[in-house]
Each structure stands twice: as C-alpha cells, then as structure tokens.
Length: 165
Image (cartoon, rainbow, N blue to C red):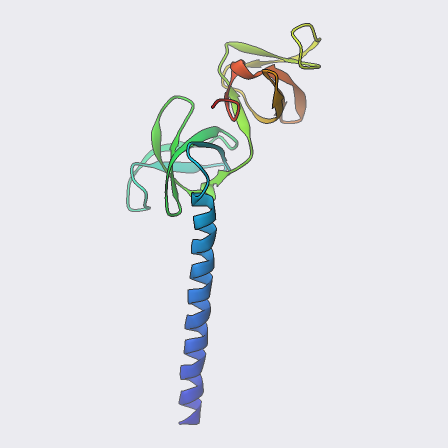
C-alpha cells in the first residue's frame, strides 16, 4: 500500500513538472508574440513547410529548401507565424522553423558587392538575382552582405529582407 502511495506521489510530481514546463514554453511564446509585427525572420532549416493554416493539421502549400531565405512575419498565433516570402506568398510556419538572423535575397538582376559602402568602391563580387546572404551593419542605404563567407557591401535597395520596413 505504501508503494502505491509513493507511485501516486511520483505521478503528481511528474504532472507538476509537465505543467511547469508547459507554462515555461508558453511564456517563451508570449515573449516572441510580444514582438511588434511585421518583423523579419529567416528560414532556420534546410527544409521548411509553409501551411495554409496555423497547425500541422493543415496541408502544406509550399516547401522551402532554402535555409536563410528571408520572410516577413505578418501575424502571430501561439507558436505559429504567418509569413510572407519574397514573392508575396503567405502562409503559416511553426516558430521552430524560423530564426531571427537578418538575411536578404538579391532582387536586382545583379548586385555588386563592394569593398566599402560607396558606389565608387571596388567591386569584389557580383550577386545574381535570387542569391541569399546574411545582412549586418545596414546604414546609409548600404548593408554588409555575406554569401557563404564572401563579404561585401550591397545597396539596401538591391535586396529584399531585413532592410525593408
């Protein structure tokens, strides 16, 4: 009888721990949900499904195989984010598929990556339309753009992503 009582007590402890963990997860979601929309995110996985609704029960309308592709978060619902991709398609992604890493995709036919943030600076590389890279140090209409270790400065108007408001 004492053994049964201890098992019952252990169930309560595990149940209590589960409730605490669930509340902790909800608290994390509340913090992320407190971010003003729209905001920028990027795809954090090598494959990410965009769904027609905010649940795994909804079918996928797109499958992205492009890690770091920028998306604009336009709505938040629990752990789900309604996002817009560079082509304007909208749908829902689970928060675990997204990252806060600022990225951009070249939208100009060709974007020169320059040695410094100036039109007169030497061109280091040329990025074709659709190239995805990580953005940093955006100011004065220029951003540092890193494409797999190749870095340069690109005009902010030549990329779609964390530079747009």
